Amino acid sequence: MHTVEIVLLVLMFGAVTGIVARYLPAVPLPLIQIAMGALLSWPQQGLHIALDPELFLLLFIPPLLFADGWRIPKREFFAFWRPVLRLALGLVLFTVLGLGVLIHWLIPAMPLPVAFALAAVVSPTDAVAVSAITRHLGMPNKTMSVLEGESLLNDASGLVALKFAVAATVTGAFSWQGAVVNFLWIALAGLAVGIVLGWSYARLREQVTRRLGDVAATQMVVLMVLLPFAAYLLGESIGASGILAAVAAGITTNFADLGRGDFVSERLQSENTWSMIESAFNGAVFLLLGLQLPSIVVTTLEADKVDFWQLAAHVLILSTALLALRWFWFALGLQGRHLRVLVSSQLAGHSAPDQTARQRRVAWLISGIGALAGIRGAVTLAGALSVPLLARGGHPFPERDLLIFLAAGTILFTLIAGSVGLPILLKRLPQAPEPPGEREERLARLVACRAAIAGMTLGEAERAGADPQWLAQYHEAEGRLLQDYRKRIDLLDDGDVITTPEAEAQLPEILRQRRQRYIVQLELHLQCLHTERTAIYAERHAGRINDEALRRLVSEIDLAEVSLQRRLTVARRTLAKMPPPPASG
Image (cartoon, rainbow, N blue to C red; front, side, top):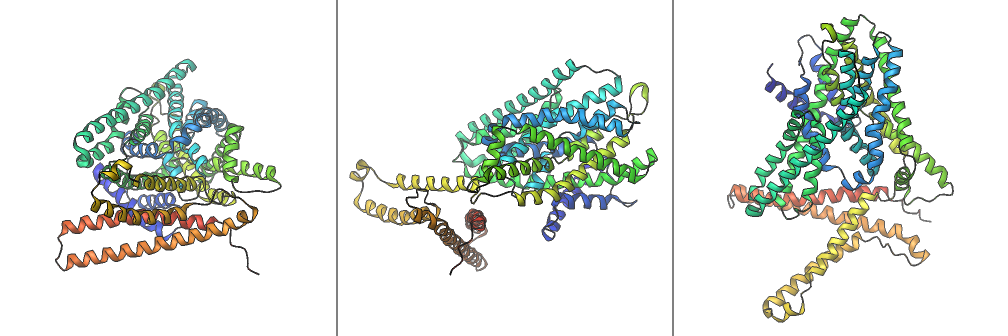
């Protein structure tokens, strides 16, 4: 089967599994996609794909990592750069050494350099898998920022460790000095390539839009979609990390976007395009993992002539040890100020006499969440498949099939462990009455409303030189808008300034009533938009407007509905987390 046909089939089945997941909300989407891939390839006449690791990395990983770098909260990412680097660098080295020794002890037939290669393959977490599993589980924002930052950066350290473990197996030589120099080049050069390309794209876009405005929005979005591929290819061509280049390009582009508040069309097209790419490519990655699993199992069993259950036991032991090492390092690396920040963010709004015990419990929960969130995915499989077939003297690479099998088993184990364990731990984690992210968003809306009110006030010179009729119309419009903004402020303001204990006691119920009124208003507004859209379609069916007018009017309503629907979702979530009203009587 040709590569184009394979890609199209994988994308199609990715969309199908996304629909199936809607009917199975209790099962994480990645597991459904892996199961679908395994079912498609298991029969003798099934879909079998000879996966080229380099092509796989080029087609699917750069855009996904670019999107993660583009979307990751930069404030939290840079605030927690120390624990991120400890996890992305220190944990990888700790895992390679500790797990490598354990693998060699458990499987003596596997030489120590090969054991280190396997440990290096499974050491980096997968940014795509982590976000796919934890996206809708209520992961704390700050903890998620640390995990995302780690998974974006540890690919380079894991792949460098793999490269040197493979080189030691093939050549029988290893140099710590060469490893350090090579790692610095791979990481720093990759980051530099991504930053330069991201900055160059931002400058080009600035020059184009300064002359043309939003007219060229579609073309600039197309160039943005191609940017991660360019960063990856250029990084790989100079021997640097193409993965880090794609991540750095995404982060740089996001910084450039902060000064582009006026370009609405480009921003909407970018969001919609990347949402579609992330959905399609995420599905493709996990489907390809599933497609490879049956052939990996069969090949390993035939090559090593071992019992399947013995191999499964090895997977269980190695995966458990991997998560245990990660838990230990996560708990150790987040001691001190950074762990206190993560814990205090979860205990905001909670008061209890045993606050110290509660803090200790939350710290243990966060460490457990960090360990289970160490999910392995596409990069691990691609790294395992990239191990060469031959070693020194043209002999087969020692235990290559077993290495690939154990890596694939680790991917599956960590996915299942994360899918089952993370919801349990996250439910036990105390939630703030209003999550920090939602509170910041609400306060930003307040600031925007007050700024809009202040901006409507005319100065003395403007009023003196204005036409009386225009001035009367302006004041009429100003009064209507002021009424609307003041209603929104009333619904958003939580009354931060509390003057008396009686007022403080009544505040939760006041806030609940305000949220309920806000939700009713949003629901009514959405109902009105639906009625507007139905009327516009009726106008088109009657032939009173053409298709162009229909698309333009419906697009305006759709954009308003998306905004209102998101606000309604946040408001309902906030209301659900508020303490229940006191029982009457």
